Length: 183
Image 1 (cartoon, one colour):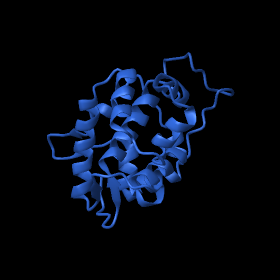
Image 2: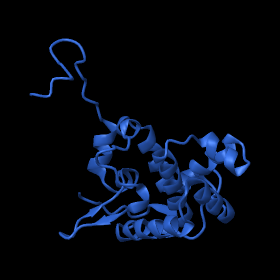
Image 3: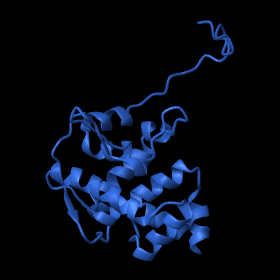
């Protein structure tokens, strides 16, 4: 993976936490409305947090983590590791979340990833599943595996691939026999 320095890119520590919570919610197959209901909020209020249009409050972080069955320290630790990677790649990671989605480049890119053809089709695989809260993964050969939502922000080649992704078409009819395992 080739990472490019994105000098001038800005995000906040709380942005990493909100994106991690959104990804963890999706991993668990939960809808925004379910999280909002557990928080006693409207679905719109929680959607704004996930989109970076409303700040993630400290109490909300704890309550969502409780609902998702994870520790806030896990989310904050993963956010810290990703934040360090972003800083190493020229990003400014601020302590205060900006008031506008346009000023937080990570949220802008995360929204673009989730709307991209590749982002829309990405789903956890039961055969090769690693939770967003397990990353990033540092390999013995010096490479780092990062979650696709963060790779989209850092890796221009990956971003282009996701933006132009076309899923393979399966031939359900015709000569394909899905139950024949001899081939």
